[in-house]
Image (cartoon, rainbow, N blue to C red; front, side):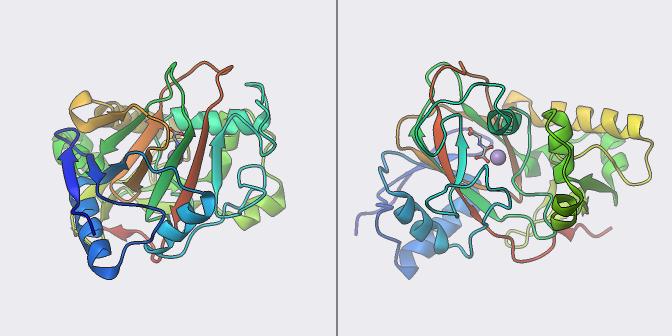
Length: 291
Ligand code: OGA
Ligand code: MN
């Protein structure tokens, strides 16, 4: 078994890992090593992993159960655990920018963390660059532990002990899509999540927001809540906290949804971009920081 070679990519977060062959799930010792590296660096980049969707799913299973996205238009028709972040449909045809699926996927251009609208949000995501963009389409990751620690006192006071509403329906409003039906709403009711969360493994505290799903904060008028979310995002976007990932074909990037946010940068919509994601399902509700 080759040794793992780890190279830090940015002072705030991110490491490239070589010496892994994702076609074969790691044994227990290697898995523990990978997990430790993940907890330390938050975002791992595995270059040159030309794997099948089945291998992608099998690798992710080492970390737990997988989420199956609740919307048909996003998940793969061939393998339901594959979430398609793509402007190309299951038949391989490029969709126009105003196609509802493309509009929804494009909201990943705003900062968020995956499936924060679930009562037990995802642990992490594993994204495979199948067809990558050269005109943009970088994925930016921000370290929300560091963001939390850097908050000025005035903002820290405002998030202390507070909860934000995470609502899948908010995404639909932003994308100007058909509002959710009562049935869809009942399937994914909005949830209040603490804004200061404790990571269940590292025990570190991070800021927990996911602006594509948030526009309400507990006990705050909406205009004030929106301003606070804007101010928090501006800090999260500061370069000192952000690792920008420029994709190469068959990079696989794995991130921790419990202590990072991400966004994709704009790209030419006539360029094909096909990214396949697996999502490690949450096992517990979000843990609020104690005061
Ligand atoms: C995601 C996501 C960003 C990208 O897969 O969850 O937000 O770069 N993707 O495609
Ligand atoms: Mn995402």
